[in-house]
Length: 222
Image (tube, rainbow, N blue to C red; front, side):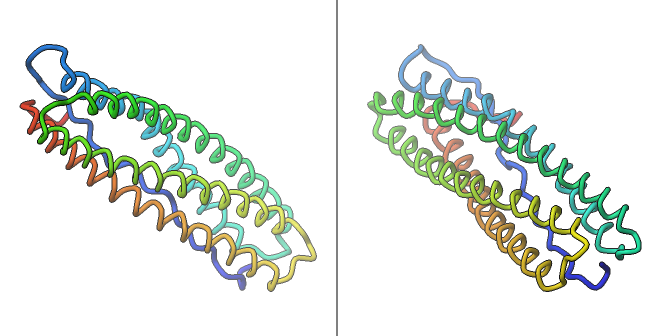
């Protein structure tokens, strides 16, 4: 198989948001409620960050398995099958971690809705404006994740098709190249959505910090 095109590997980037812990003052008003809800969003997304780390490990393993496979030829057929089976198991594991990751984001969305409701009760125009700006970035962030999730889910299915195909003795170079192109195209889309997601995460963190400062909280990164 050493004449076949090497598959491009493009993993999902880790969430770049930093948890911001605040020492606020005052009573349990709408601003305080907003702060509490936004901090809960950070907490419910911790599993997301954990899953990102696990996915990164599995992606690196997948990359190695594939590279090992393409170094072999049909004289090493039993080894190719063994590696392909291991890669299929890896794909199943990635699929499970991806679903757990999505559950965390879904929980984040629910918690963020509570923050949105609290923001609606804020009377201070400056603080309310800052809250709306943060919400815009968070909504774009969620939309980017939805696109990233769907495309990565598709990419995993293409990976599975590829590894099942590799186990066939009558596999042609043309068929393999076509499948690799599908895999690469899908991971390119994952990368695009990941870039948008990470950018919106960065912008949201910045907006949230500005919101907290406008509300009179002392911002301290954890």
